[in-house]
Image 1 (cartoon, rainbow, N blue to C red):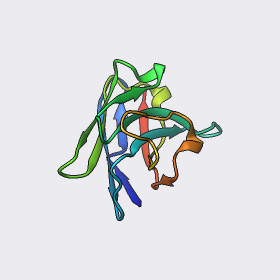
Image 2 (image 1 turned 45 degrees about the horizontal axis):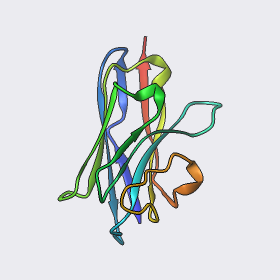
Image 3 (image 1 turned 60 degrees about the vertical axis):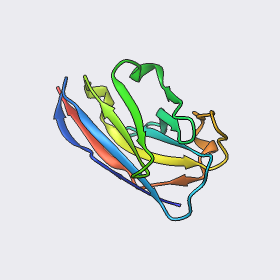
Image 4 (image 1 turned 90 degrees about the horizontal axis):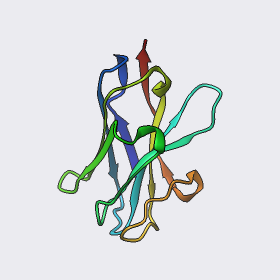
Length: 126
């Protein structure tokens, strides 16, 4: 599975960005796609994820109400709409796939995800 993340950029605080993640290669019927952020000097942390079979979303507390994750099964693409961005959202954002997620589960632990894409940079200026 290859994962291509895109959509990052520079935005002012309060602005919006939409990230996209397009898995390709071998497909699985029951998997989850997660987004993680890694700020300089910090660990990679869960931001949001979605179960591709059921559409069940999951969010980190820091992103609830500001970020919205969705999927387009026809395009095999996952979107992360990020609104009301804050300077502390500045990070490299990675998408990842967990191919054993089942039909509902969306793991938050980094170790649950087997495949990772290259990151996309998000910079929020104050």
